[in-house]
Image (tube, rainbow, N blue to C red; front, side, top):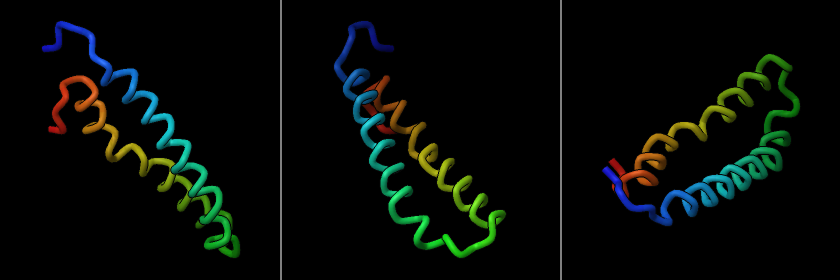
Length: 71
């Protein structure tokens, strides 16, 4: 258990916000041209999946922020 403050948490939070911003810009830039001709239900499914995809690495990232280890 951590007893002293570290820079991992504020730097990790800034990195997380930056990476989510980059991810959302990439999705907003490239995905509409790929799925723009699909029907609305299929587009919704793709955007739902992409909206949840960034959560997959989040658990390990939060563990690293707290402990300094990836697992």
